[in-house]
Length: 198
Image 1 (cartoon, rainbow, N blue to C red):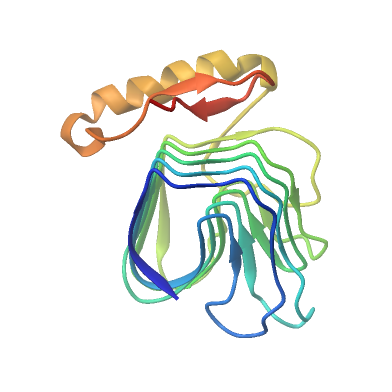
Image 2 (tube, helix red, strand yellow):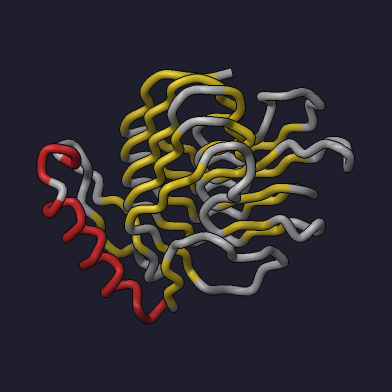
């Protein structure tokens, strides 16, 4: 179970988990967390999958597999371009959320395919649990997947990626001190929004 601060981290490897226990989700940066967690300027390019029992509600997420218990979750300026797979719960940024308290996902992008045969697939994050997830300026790439898009994020087509990048960078400027250490966004060779590495 992870908690604390994760900044300027990335994953390019495939990650798979089959552990049938709470806090054991599969994630590009964090598998499972139940405490205060801040994630800034992070991204995932690997395929993430949870392959445990079909009766488990363990999640898979591009940045965080699942968030449980108490505490505060803040995910800012992150993206996922990897394929996310879990039978029950899968999300581009956050997989499963069964936590009370505040969860804030800001200025994040999901470009990855979400595969959830049980139909709980989310481009940004699910709205489960006792808390409310707050979405601030988040985006997901419209593409074929087996999930449901119930987030408050904005859908965009690949040809609109430059407009999305402009809005992401504008949000950083507008938020001043809060986003002081946030990296700027650019576009990669495939035409997707990514963070600009110094």
